[in-house]
Length: 245
Image (spheres, one colour):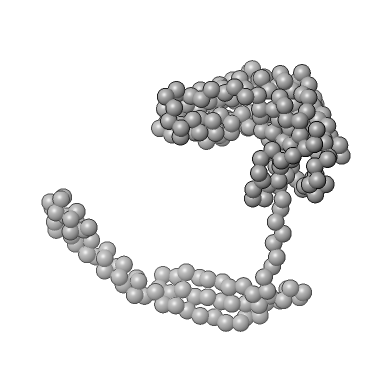
């Protein structure tokens, strides 16, 4: 079948997807990762209740690591997307204000760490276990494939039905011929404008300037003095707050 975008691309990422027939190893992997995400959500909710806020994926990984490696023999980087998926699912669930404490994880899908994916001429190599790989054939019919595939892979999404590979497009930064340097000081702001020769890379000073901020400093000091005076002399809390306001 012809390939298409999995979703509308935005920013510096471009995504191409196609349907495929997953191998038994991939299906088993997706079931295991679904179980891992479910366990990660429970652990994340436990940490949220203990600390008052959801953990970061890094903190969740520290807590989940002993269980994950005791249950599975997958390559070590597979725990990273598990933790990211668990935190993302929990945060999304809490925003919806659903009565259930944790979300249900039913879909067979996983976004893989870029360290686990390598692109060859006509196949994607996914590291499942150390030295054990899954090879996924690429469908190159997409009109943008030749252009996007020259960039680095940023992530890979695999489900029981589709494969979606995202590429990160690096923006080319041009060096401006003129640059302005700003220095923020306590009582003034100074600026320097220079011209940079793009061929010889030499700098030529064009102009300098200074803006005084002494009045701002005086106003700030005056209000600090007044505030401290009120806080020291007015003992009644309500009256003091009204005066300060």
